Image (cartoon, rainbow, N blue to C red):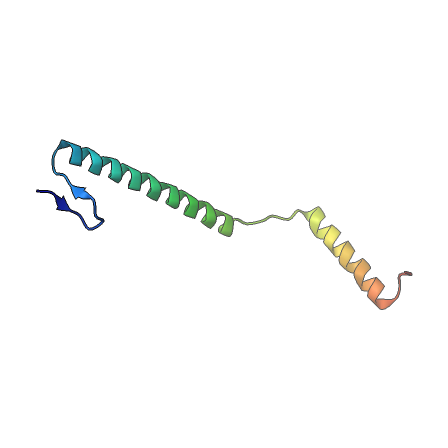
Length: 77
């Protein structure tokens, strides 16, 4: 007589069943570890800070100044 588990597979409590259970456990463990790694990478990207140098800030200020001058009509098109 063979018992069926909830997913429809046969339940074997002998050596083969134990081996299959172990393989399934290791597979699930690996999948969980991969998902945790992906989640950690997403979190790291989300929380990572971007740094701007002083030169970047000066460049942006200059561009903003030029744009303001264009708006005010001080720069010829």
